[in-house]
Image (cartoon, rainbow, N blue to C red; front, side, top):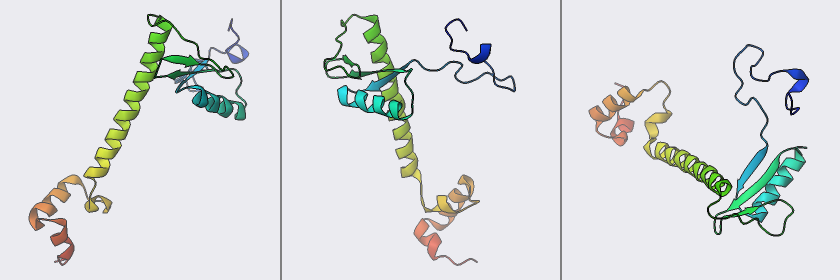
Length: 145
């Protein structure tokens, strides 16, 4: 309340039903993975949405430079800076999260087969059918009997 982040003196920690909110306060910083062009694009997107109270910065991997919107030169933090270390950890975690998601999505796509499109056909029944017929090709050519 002291900082003015809560509306009408509400604590902002629970929804109407009493459950905790996922985000009890608005973000104050958006960190972009990239340099000046990526930061400018993120700033434009926030401006188009009418959001002007969130700071934006970008971390370029090549030289670990911190870019701010509307600045022609990056901020170069010392290699031993705790702030730089925090930004690197945030970036690395975002990379890990995205890579893990993409790998899981690709693995699921590779495991998917023609029997996955049959409604009501579970894993156990698929295995029984493949074991009985030997292949999907033989299953397709089989009669209903």
